[in-house]
Image 1 (cartoon, one colour):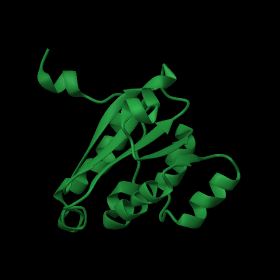
Image 2 (tube, rainbow, N blue to C red; image 1 turned 60 degrees about the vertical axis):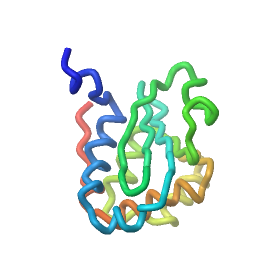
Image 3 (tube, rainbow, N blue to C red; image 1 turned 30 degrees about the horizontal axis):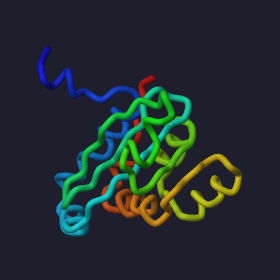
Image 4 (spheres, rainbow, N blue to C red; image 1 turned 90 degrees about the vertical axis):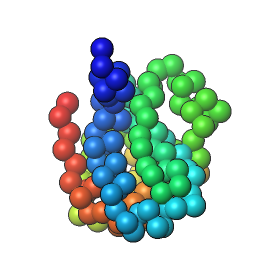
Length: 142
């Protein structure tokens, strides 16, 4: 088996990876996050895989983490700084919209459709989407 097949991300993590990793070519991203080390876990509760976004000194990449058992997603096991958890359709609604805003996220949170921990780290996602509008063009193939 080739190395590429071994490391290919599955499910939700694969979708997130395709949308986020082009930021590695974005000079504004490299400058803004040159000193940052951050891990944000995006968990689609209804899927089998969660996506761990890792920002490491101007580079961003995604790792897939199995949703089950739930211990896989705990902070001490996954090592995340921020957590955003909702259903796959809700992620696609948020990511697929023209503009993600704090107001839209708060509205979903108040309606208990989104769960997050480490809010200041999760808000970094808004900065990522502002840097590259291509990220919001989500394609999901079940």
